[in-house]
Length: 555
Image (cartoon, one colour):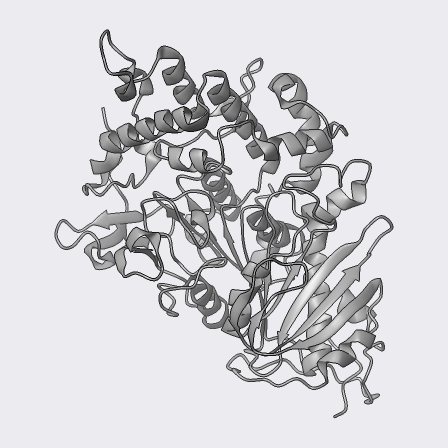
């Protein structure tokens, strides 16, 4: 079968390889056709292994191999992925500039392709290929891709890769995501003989940063972007993490005893604020309205110490829930922890923030910098100047993304302790201000806030009390419809111009996906919230509607 030598994918790489696609025999100038938006089974136009000889400028294809359906363990992985379809695994290295070496991995369905591409993001300080997020997308029928963000993994929150390597910081910050989608589109066109009908992105944490960077810097790369728990202001968040963990450690809130103290604080906050939404269910619907003060629980003479706080403990808990500001100038830096999020603080460890530490080590070009010496007034400006300008995704002007028809579906958990949610709400409001209001903004960008769950909703194993499964990132949606599956919701918005009016989050009994669903709750487009109708089963989504809540808070 002859392959077209010229492909038109709207990206720089596809233009550059106009005459370089190996295996083509057609000298016409006809661009590769685009996959049908209703396709469910598009076969390849060439053998997988032949992609090893594909010529793409600044790219080396390191392998192209067919993988049989069933269980697959990627080389170097300790995890096996089951129930995968037949696919073509392509690995490559992209070096767009001197000092850059970005590992790319692309999985292309070899029998059942839906005509679309879905890229996944990274986490922490990168360096890993997240096969666990690729596998669910492959099962859905997408071509899927991941990148190591331009450096190999050495250790969790390693900083050495960036020190003395400014191009690697750029790769991590935004360039690797663009390189991956650019080259993936070229490989898709060669393998199938046609371009993808739509390109999507799905990521959480720093993967959420990847998605926002794409919307801001490369607005034509993706038709639809799904991001959660976005570490958009990573330098602000890393700084806040250091401030907050330092306060807890200095107050002796560490180890098992520290976890017990924070668990007591969480229970007290929920007790004080649970009923604000009219439902007593162990969930604080919107913790920004919760005004519980830990100093109200300072121990009295003779009181059981397991039921109260010392003044030092109470003040530390109060400190971490306040906005982080510069202690000298008073300038705002980042939002504080929300009441009820203590479970997520415990999950990520009661020690000085490793993410914040790594960022400051990079900024100071010192891999042994000691976080106990941290001084916000002195250190933070250098972090913003040396790192933030590269890795932070702060630009609220999404006009070009909107103009090219892009759709952005964002979600964030209220209990997120790593990238606290205030930034996401503030950013959405900034975009709305730039666009001329929420109504205009919601034509292309919608935000859904999720109560009572921690960072990235715990991934496939949530630890919060609220329902969290919306089919995002590596979750398996409880149903493939647009209300229960955020990926389907995004696709319908992009492809049918049907914007999501709500997402229904589901919770399994004991957070065990092998057990029955015991709660469902609607998530509403911000600024709306789920409002109890006043009657009905509060574990059923149908007992709620999306509306404007009362603004009262607890005394």
